[in-house]
Structures are given as C-alpha cells and as structure tokens.
Image (cartoon, rainbow, N blue to C red; front, side, top):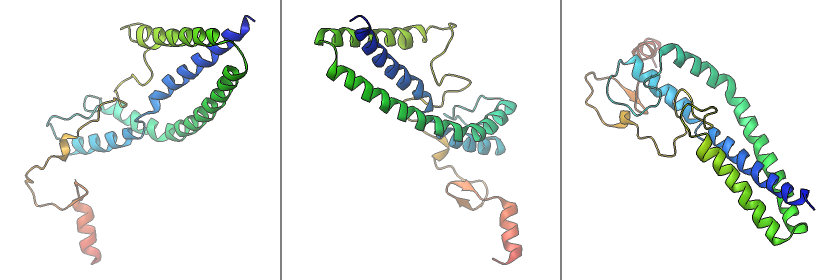
Length: 184
C-alpha cells in the first residue's frame, strides 16, 4: 500500500511543523514586561546598559508594538488552545496509524523521512540569512530566547532622591501628592 507510509510521514511531519511554528508563542507574555520596563527606562532617560530586547526600538515602533500586543494577545491565546487541540487530535491519529497499520520498517523509514524533512526545513533552510521565510519568532526584536534575560534594572542603585518605591518602581509624585491632599 503506497499511501500508508506517506500517511505516517504526513502525520509525523505536520506534528513537528506545528510544534516548531508554535514556538513563536513561547515568551509572548514576557513582551508585556519588556514594554513596561522599556517605558520606565525611557521615562527616566536611563542610558545604563540593558538586556531588554526593546532598547533599540524606535518610539513609533514601540507604540505600534504596545497597541499590537494588546490587540493580538487574545487571538494568540485562542490560537494556542486551537493548536493544542489539533496536536492532540493528530497525535491520536498518528498512534492509531502506528498501532493498526504498516510494518515496522515502514514506520521507521517514514519517521526518519519526516524528521529529516523537518530538520532541513527548520534547521537549514530557515536559518539561511536573507532567504525567506525567517524562523518563527524572529522579527523586529527577539522576545522568545531560550536563555533567561537578566534584568539589569534589578540591581540596587543608590537613589539620588528619596522617593518611595513599590515593587522596585518609583511611585509617581503626582499620585503621592494626590494621596496627601485626600488625607489618606
């Protein structure tokens, strides 16, 4: 049966592709923290070294990012749920195909072909510079790096003013004055 091993290759490959494409979602929620930290650094005119991936983004791009993040986050979360359901369905289909059809050699060869095709696509072709498309998650800035980002802002710095802080961020003086006027 010719379509049998091709069916197994197809199930293997589409699962690998879906997982690879979903990697762009990893770290999506971190973008909000990056935006908050970068807005704070820019408001303080902080020129100290930072590991924030947004430090070199222009102000207009930062505003677009902020708007886009708020706009697309519900869709990204819904997409993640849909991807998870689809992946579960495909895994059930793959397992049933493996259990009930094909001989061991066909299963092994189709698995090897699927993994090699995935490897060439995502580890060779997409990593070539100036060849489209790029890897998922690569764009104006890299928010989903595998390495944890250490925030330079967390270091204790001597405060030049005696301002109050909450969770490491200075309390806005206008808010502080409003609180004093209200008598709270």
